[in-house]
Image 1 (cartoon, rainbow, N blue to C red):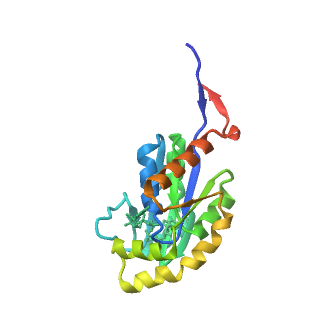
Image 2 (cartoon, rainbow, N blue to C red):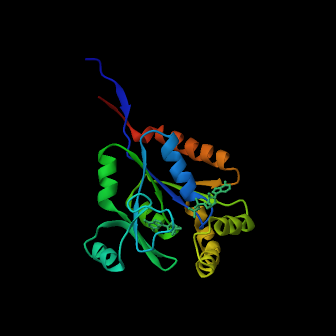
Length: 201
Ligand code: ADP
Ligand code: 5GP
């Protein structure tokens, strides 16, 4: 039988941005257009928003359950964001990479730094809004948060943005189509890197 060359996959693409910049939209879009890339479903103690489905958008758990998972080291990373706990399950990552999928993770800057230390070769992408004014408009238009929640998120924008220089790539999410194309270009280019190695099957 003739052998073929195949690229080794299982790359982690980590996306961070201030709330409302559009990272969830971009992450979902890339899983629809690029083959073999899956979205990492995080665990959170935040209550579901209208329309959010358990185990699709997040796995929604109690604080007690989340803390029990921390105690047995179930998370590849976790952080407190806007007063709620969010974390990435190590088991979920392993299951997906075993199936040779690349994974896209939508996580905050603290979680992203933990991932950078743990997974050499992970690719870090920061999404910026075109301006702070547009950011505020987008969060308001999404109407997913109360006024108090909205303020909490806007107050943290500057802190979140300060970390963007630690990332490998930056996408300014002005026109959505262009931003999706830029994210796809990053995924394509990173998959072609020489250090990914090619295997014979
Ligand atoms: P994040 O996950 O970063 O908090 P979302 O992906 O939920 O942000 O996007 C926030 C809101 O802005 C959503 O209502 C989304 O549909 C909208 N949005 C995202 N990208 C764009 C864009 N390029 N132009 C206009 N609206 C956008
Ligand atoms: P939201 O509540 O708007 O869905 O997300 C709030 C913040 O939590 C965003 O910055 C998002 O990237 C972050 N987040 C979502 N899942 C995780 C996760 O598993 N780990 C970490 N560290 N942050 C996460």
